[in-house]
Length: 67
Image (cartoon, rainbow, N blue to C red; front, top):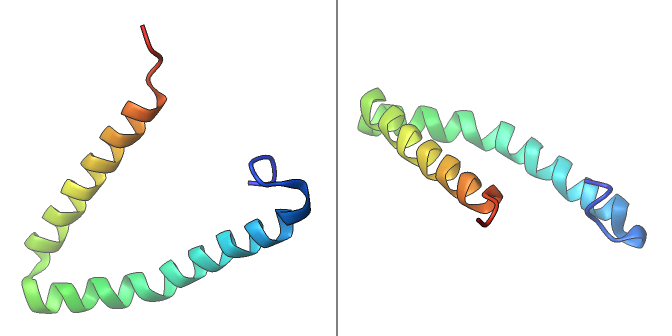
């Protein structure tokens, strides 16, 4: 993270990154539990599979070297 940020904004970038992780740790379990209660575990895990596959495809496409 520090290598990707501008020299004078490294603390701000790292603070926002830490805040994002903390927010995800707080909201994720509550949102996942509510979604499981409302839609069922199969729908939630299916959505996780779709989102995870799309993210993996996006990462693959972004890191592919041009031929």
